[in-house]
Image 1 (spheres, rainbow, N blue to C red):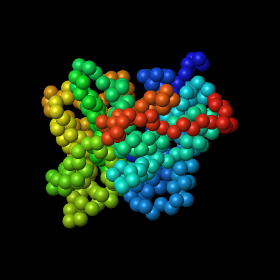
Image 2: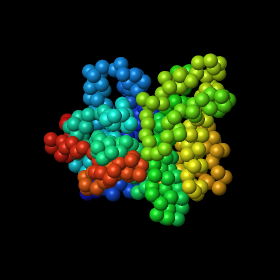
Image 3: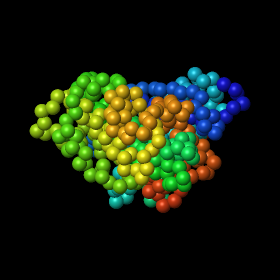
Image 4: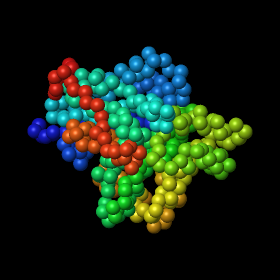
Length: 377
């Protein structure tokens, strides 16, 4: 890399709990120049999974996870920079979303907690860190999520084509990019890959259903699907946001008593749940979109993509964000590089139409290293 160039780094470890996505972008956050994926240690994944389904994790365990994730993020950034031949001094900032462990946007006092100590990340890399993006939006009356729609609008909006961008991670979220001066809307739809991944891990011993082949081997249950779709969250009007503390195996199991379905049939039903919850929202938009663009891990699930295609209007094309120049694996990490850039420039990072905030807000807490550009050796 050119030693005179300046860059941003974006980090994302989402609700899928599969690993850390790290991207290196140009200083304008318009191009992804390098990428790195790092798996999370199994012990951390298991601890996070338990935390999402119960309140049994002790405060001490939570603090240890906070520290350990800070170290994991640091390793991901340092590996990304080493592979890219970029020095820490060339990086303006790291945008680190952190790992969400609780999101209670509709509590009496709304809160959303992300862990992964930014002080450790700044110390270990020698780079300024921007983190805690959701708190500023919540303070402004919003739900703190989803935050990516602001980046989606900046990167994917087209003045002549109606596009809908759908990120399918552990949770799926939708951004409606309608031209003609219409407001940009975005919100969490419901379960994305999270339920399918958890069910697959329990019955197949695999972290995810590669290509959706196991789901494709089963037959969806319309009875179970109808029960799942009665969940009040699906009928709630936007803005709305959710997480794995809501849609998890405990939630699924509450609907299973009395059923005698094979595990693969339940997996097929979960795949159909994700597809129908997404396409139902798209069909309720004021206008039929010209194009639906998929990013996130769901883009690799052939069975899910086939069901999305089946349910979408025939006049709507279905593609991944690769068609517009960004690999679907890296869109969300790039969003947090962009949000870090917005924070350092003191520009708003939220989209009030998506989060429900009363006004645009500058998002993120800045943590600076002791000596910029010089990581701890």
